[in-house]
Every structure is written in C-alpha cells, then in structure tokens.
Image (tube, rainbow, N blue to C red; front, side, top):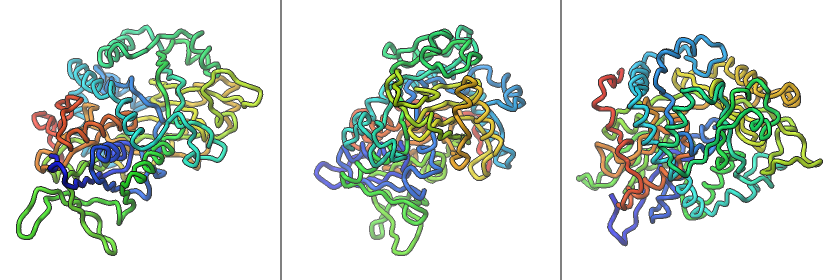
Length: 488
C-alpha cells in the first residue's frame, strides 16, 4: 500500500467530517500530501452530521442499538407518539428491507455481544487517536475556541467541557440495564469509570432535572467530555490541516467525487487511483497513491464501484436548540457565581427512553437524537421537532422549563447518520481496488471514533503494523449473510 521510501506520496480523502478530517491529519502526519474533497458547501456545514450531533465524546458507547428482543419492542415503539423510533413514509423504506433483516440478525444475543466487544476495541483507543491528530494540527481542546466560536460571547469557552455524562434510566437496577452495563465493562475494560447513582446523587449533579425522570436512577460517567460546539472543533482541526499544507476542496463542482477508478498511464493502467471529480470550469481528475472513502451516508456508491456492495443506509437524526441566556453560559465548575446566569444543565444528559441527549453547548441547550428511517431525500418530519421540544421540557423541572424560553425554530436540524445493520463501521481496504481504503458507517459514534479511525487508516496506508484488529470491520463481512440481497 505504501509508496517507496523517499518518493512523494499523495492521498485523497472523500468526506470532510470528523472521520474524514481525522484521516487527513493522520495521513499527513505519516508523510502523505493530502487533499480532502467535501461535497457540501463547507466543512462543518449547517446540514452536516459533524455539525448537528450531540457533541458527546461517547467512549462508553460500545453497545449496539440492535439489542436482543428488539423485534418485540418495535410495535410499541412505532405506536408511541413520543417514541424514539419512527418510519418516514417514503418509498425508500422498501429498499431498506434487507437492512432491517440485518438489524434483526444482529440483535441475537451472541451477535450483540460480539459486535459490542468489537466496537470496544476501537473505543478504547478513541481518545489517543484524537490526541495524536490534535497535536499534529496544533489544536488544544482545553483552550479557548477564539475565532472558531459560534458567538462572540463564547470565544473564551474551551472547545471541550469535562463535566462528565449522565444516562437516565426508568429503573437502573433492571435486568436489561444491568446486562448493558456488564457489556460496557466487558468491552471497554477496567479503565471505564461508570457509577450507578440514585435520585439524590443525580439531583446533586443536575438540580434542574425533574423529579419524575430522576427517580429510576442513572449511570454516571465522570471521565466523559463534550464539545461545546462540534463545528468549531472540526473547523479548528481543518485549519491545522491546511497550515500543514493540506488542501480542502468543497462544493458541488470542487468537492464532489463521482467515482474512483484505476489511473491510466499512456496505454496502460498503473497502480494509482484516479479520483474522478464533478466537472466544472477548468476541473481535472486527481491521481493518488491512496484514496480514503469517508463520505458517511454517501459512501455506498463509491464502495460498490470498488468491489464492495454493503448494506449502508441512513438514520435520520434531529436536533432542536434553545438560545436563552440561561443556557448559553457553560463552565467546568459546578458552583454558580452571582455573575453567571442560571443554566438548566452543566453536562450532557441522555434519555434512552426518549432517544435523545440534552447538551449545554456554548450557543444554547441542544436536544439531539431520535431515529427515523426513510432515506436522505425526503424533507424533515416537522412533528419530530415538536417531539424533541416536549421531551426536553419534560426532563426539566417546571422552573427550569419556564426559564428555557422558546426553542429557536431557525435552528431546527435534520441530518443523516451512516448506519450498518450490525452498528459497526466499515474500516479497511477495498476488495476490488488496491489503494482504496474505507472509513465510513460509524452510526452514532462518528465524532467519537474519528481520531482512532484516522490512526488505523494511516497505519494501513503507510504499511505499518495495525494497532487495532480490523477484521470485524471488513467491508466483505456481509457477503455470507443470507439476508443481504440488495434491491436493484
């Protein structure tokens, strides 16, 4: 995979999200000249998943969503008007039938456990992967966001807030919650700090949560952190990449890669990869030694052309935001001063039952989550925004809900998570084209796994020993599955 020592090596990364930019930084670090192609109007654009996510660095999230017994819960979930899972009425649902069968297959007890342990191997190195990339980019996540901040008032806020993370439960002692907790520990090892809290301990951490939602207890992850603004962090990483000589091409004409092919050389075909871009005035194709497909939910077509037809689809995710003064000032201290306005939360709080996370970001409280199936072409389901607003207010005490003020409907957001039936990403070489590497399908943990994905992609590209066993993440792992018969 690597070029000969002493020769110039070029790489292209298709996709400018957290995974793509992390791959670019790690490739650059090991000696590649790297160009990033981002089809959106900008890196961290308004509608990008790397912009609209909950911002939580979820190093604890190794348990796949396809849990044992999910088939029994589906009717109740679909009938519940405030349920986390919904179907958008689109024709795309027919194309998702094989994907749905794959989810049911992955929800078998042994498969669920196997996939959780595999995901844990990536999550255990997630922080190190970013630490290396940030050092290369010159980004200090504990320093002020400065010009990257979403508002002038938040320029002094650090990129990262290290206040921990809470997952609320209806009953933290139930067998299902206990089984998930055991699997977290098995998959993530002794370094995972996870505590079970009762109502009084929860209220001590987050007094603005309602009594109803705290009665069942919670799991507390004291080492967890979140990005006060995901877009700001991604832009800082991108600027560091550019300072190191990296090239970023964005937009329909500049950043849209239509296919990857073997590069010709005269009358012969050589061992380089041709990156075919959308044609605009003066456009040309690019020949590189390594091409990385990190285009999230839009990666399937490129992978198919490189020999791998994978059951990649999308989960439609939503967020709403509240921009009142009470939710715009976030510090890492649990003590309020007279100069700090009251704020509803100090750290992210997850409602598994509601299927969303509340995160106190620099520009306001964000409620992000939900799962909706129906493809990436249909518009937003407006009722989902109202659902998130109701869920947000229900998690807070009456006083905190009143202080929250109205939601900022201008910021209502719909994005697309790249998802595979087993909840594992695709990372590794293409089956049908040397020089092409995959880095897509990270579902709910794309932000979290960006750094470690970039690290192992760079190891592959440079021909170095792998720090993670990539066999569970192979693109061809679905070939033998009886359910995987894609619709034409």
